[in-house]
Image 1 (cartoon, rainbow, N blue to C red):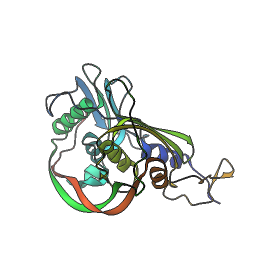
Image 2: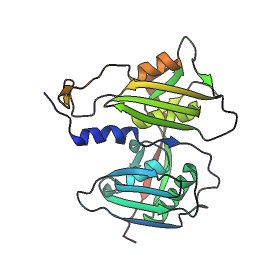
Image 3: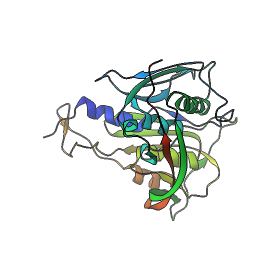
Length: 268
C-alpha cells in the first residue's frame, strides 16, 4: 500500500492555486509599478508558495519560486509555454514581497509584476505562435447547458476552487466568459485550453469533480489509514455533463514566450 505524504497534499493545492480573478487592466504595460518590492534569492530548503496577490490587493507575494514561474503568472500562460533563456531560470529560486501604492486589481498587479521582472531580471523576450498539443473547448452535440449570469451590476470575472476532501474539488464561477474559463482550465490540466465554443456571454456555474492522483501516487494509496476515494466525475466528465461542453485533445496555435535575455536578480 502507498501512503500520502504532506508534499503530495501540497501538490493538489499548488495545481489548483489560489482563487483567480480577471479584470481589464486600468493602464498600459510599463505605466504601473510597485511602490516598493523586496526580491531576493530563497534560502536553501525553504518552503515554496506560488506567486499570488495577497488579500486586499496591495501586495504580491511568492516564496521559493523560479523566474520561469514568475513569467508564466505575470503573463497568464502555462509554465511550459515559456521557452529559451539561460538554464538558471528553471532552477534559481526567489522570494518576492511587493507592495502597491494602493489596493489594485489582479490585472494591474500583473502589470506591476511584468515591470518588476523587466527591471530586476533585465528580462527581454519575444512571442511566437506554435502548433502544440491543446485541449479544444467546444460545445457538445446536445448544446450548452450554461445559464447567463444574473448579476445586476458589472464586476470582475472570478473562479474559485474549494477542496472538499483530498482530490474532491468544487469550482465556483461567476461572471465568467468562456475565454477566461478556458485559460483557467489550462492552468490545472496538462496542456493549454483553447476556447472554440463561440459563446460570447458571461456565465455563473458550479462544478464538482474529482482531480487526478498526483504524480507518484498510485490507486489504492492510503490517506489517514483509508484508501483514497477516487469516485466521482473527472473534470472532463463534469464539463460535459453539467455545462454541455467538451474538451478534446488536438493540436492548435499556442502563444509562446521565448526569453531572449535575463540576468540573475540580486538582493535589494
